[in-house]
Image (cartoon, rainbow, N blue to C red; front, side, top):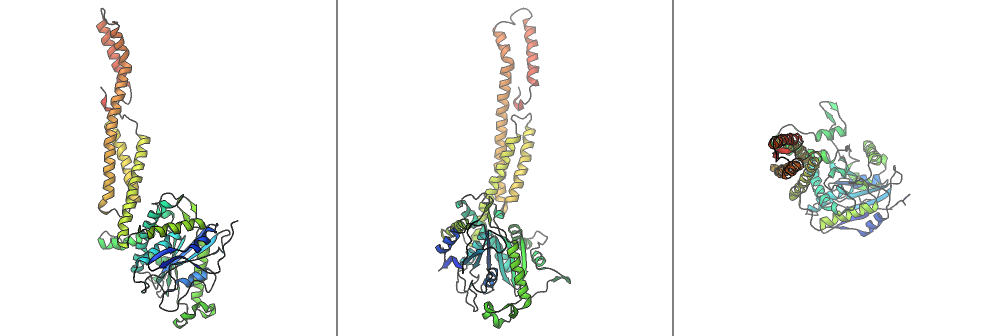
Length: 456
């Protein structure tokens, strides 16, 4: 059994110093010593919305991650707290508390999205902490940062040992837990009570139609549903009177709103019992050294400038993912044609029918793996490549037919040529015998299968 890590308090994992993200070596040393599989829970949300309070509750403590009581953001960068998992033996629970989004003191919002994207990539359960209700602004932010994290993974994962299929983002994406603080709406639709989960799914429901406004409405919802297939929602009442917020970490449960206490307990129970082990593509279960490598690789990619600004991330991601989709489709086409095509074919239509079937499969694979293929640019590229392959197969088919027919003619008529040279037919009645033999050989030639279109 691997040794358990017991940290008395959190340490900074990724420092945010003057707009630059820097990995803390002390935290990396802790991860290096953590050999157990990791369950990594990260939380992201606007500053001053109680993220750190929830993370302290998961740690079983009232104090640990800094809880501010003023308008000033306390958590900077990403902080880490490792401890034995309370429900999974021989597993380590890693809690990641992040710098609050939208801190007016920072000015530059670029760090917000970078930290947000890192939290998604590092976690196995991602807690998205927002205020009051699910609105379009929160939906758009999660959508855009999801795409940014996809791009960060794509440029980072080739540097990770053992990771396969770096474009298959669903393999490493965390489960989503959406927490709504100070929730004030009634959970009901048409007079019928609904659950928090049903409220989340209703918020993600697509609208029917094809006009531009509906496409813009549906796009973030499609993205969130695709990359977070496992979703959970918790609502929280206000914990106490606002005048007591400054002493929140010192208040006993009997001094808090009873509904809030129950809601926090339900949240912690879900995280402990349902959060999965962090796993990378290829089935790699992440331990401390793996997480250390992932942290270093992603932060290095950001430091190198490999991660573009938000406006360019979608274009860059589309380029990467659609290029990979074309390669995957072409590989499938080549494999199927190699397995099923036997040259030469008897007719051109036989070849074209097989090409058509494999082409349809390839395009279907491309469509399943493509991402925002504007004006069908990459699909048209795929179709051009498939057309070139078809023409090449047609040429190969003609050459194979010519070679097959030539070989048959030599094999069948070669002995006849020798007999003519030997003068076997240079005698009375020889011409008749020659014609008779020729017809027999021609019949034998035409009976041979798979001569193709170059049959003489």
